[in-house]
Every structure is written in C-alpha cells, then in structure tokens.
Amino acid sequence: MQYDATLDATGLVCPEPVMLLHNRIADVPVGGVLRVIATDPSTQRDIPRFCQFLDHRLVHQECGEERFVYWIERNS
Figure 1 (tube, rainbow, N blue to C red):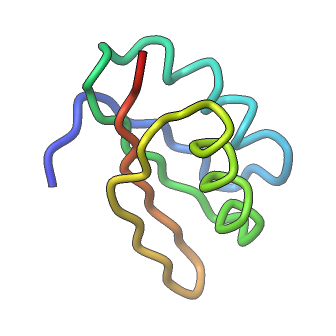
Figure 2: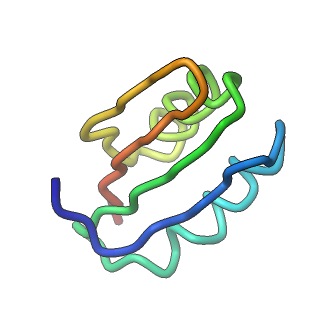
C-alpha cells in the first residue's frame, strides 16, 4: 500500500502515539497517506477514534500480536 510518510511509534505507550500522530499528520499533504507503526495495543482503539474525531480516513489497518500498522489519509 502506498503512503507519503511514516510515523514509527514503536515502543511508545498511550498517549504518546496519538500525540505524535496529531503532530505528524500536519506534515502530510491533504489527500496524502501517513503510515503509523505502533506496538501499544491501545492504538487499536485510539487511532480509529482520532481519525473519526478529526475527520481523517483510516484507509487500512493491520493488527498483529505485537505490531499494529495504520494507513491514514489526511483530510483538510
């Protein structure tokens, strides 16, 4: 899957991944995709809520036992 930038939040725990996501998504052009890599299981709840609240589109997610990857399309 294509993306414009990556945020590696490996090893960080709530609320750090979402705080970094909030800052990093601003660096992605509108319509661009940010790939987020995380290891904190709470991102399975927090990142979809972040997208819903700020009207970004969660394009795809892959959730394994120890690693979670999200592709988020930035909205205006």
